[in-house]
Image 1 (cartoon, rainbow, N blue to C red):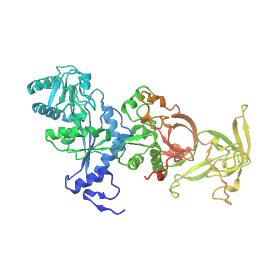
Image 2: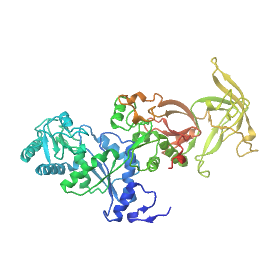
Image 3: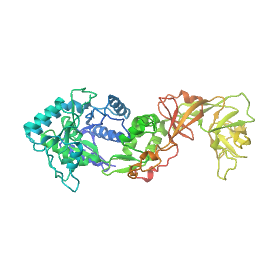
Image 4: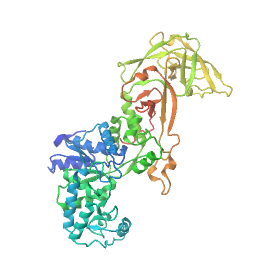
Length: 559
């Protein structure tokens, strides 16, 4: 595709998303000399995959157009926020491969926000309201009915200043008063019906301690913080589009730098919930093993499961930037991980559901080593030594006593190749009193050794490990946390926990070739013919990141 150079290193072409089109237009018209974005999480929980998309978008746009991105914590509710969440957020952003130009907090601007609030009071555009939260809610009216004025709406400027300063001084208890903007109680956009600017919260803040007992609301805080930092493109998810006019109203009324908000569709994934409230409930009630449980959609959870930052950035790019909400198939995320790991992960053999296979005509007490590539994508690269012996484990599923015609694994009178080693032929089996197979016997063809003798092929190849020269490891097989595909469409009144998958984690003991424990690549490895597994840094178990089979057909989606 032909492209032409734009200012600040950007390129224009047919495949720009709508945000890139806006930015390129702004740069071309000289509206801004430098693009500035921000990522503004509230430190009241751990980030999830939806936040990862927003991080990739905000930091990615600034990087593409030679701009900068600020990390700003929206820390305006001391009851829910904690430094634990601050540190986890910073770790997640760095893990994704991004760094911020400046680290700011909404609390950095509390003094300035307070001064602006007094300015609005003096202009007759804000007042102190003594109504309860429920009275305020009812007084706002409905979409089809205008609101009603608060009985305190026409207090004098002097009285409002006195009361607001007394609120700041801590004279009044929580919930007794709020500061509201004085706009229009009949406005069709209900956000304009005298929104609350400040509420009273007597609680220590993680940064300012007990200095403040009044805290600004999101709608009053966000736009002004953007303005102070001269953010040019404030990018939010689509549910904030109704907030944008109020965002603009505060900026225009205060006459400060005109930051502007743009909205994109939030990320919704199948078999997943993204609500912080629901995720917190899962953690607190021990439905999962903490925020970083590998079944969780949190960034720390998917990192612990074995996802790579490269795969998450690829996923964000494939999903793209849309103006309308949609649901993305979880299989696309798994496809992106396979694409990344297939090219660079090391391979090992491991057996998760073993049955012993005895090679009757192979010398006892003999160990033979076969060369195998660490990664077939690099055939000339490093090799590993795979120990072979008279007794090996194979997957129980790789033998079938009553096999159909097109079953190409081991079966009575059948032959298979043990990967990297010899061709073996079935001889007999041993069963217990219940008819379960406890041991298989076969013979091997010495002339079928790879690289020696006359090569012959068989249709089936299976993996194996030496029973006497192997390592026992714990494997955790993870599946979707929920059984319902569209968690966002659960009927009203139905508890989402009803759909928790009881088989979302299955623990197995596996046998693996010894070199697995020497792997220091830092990424998930492939258990050949089984899937990708990542050594859990917390407990040493091997977490199944994803299988080898693609259920997502990327070629059919237009990606």
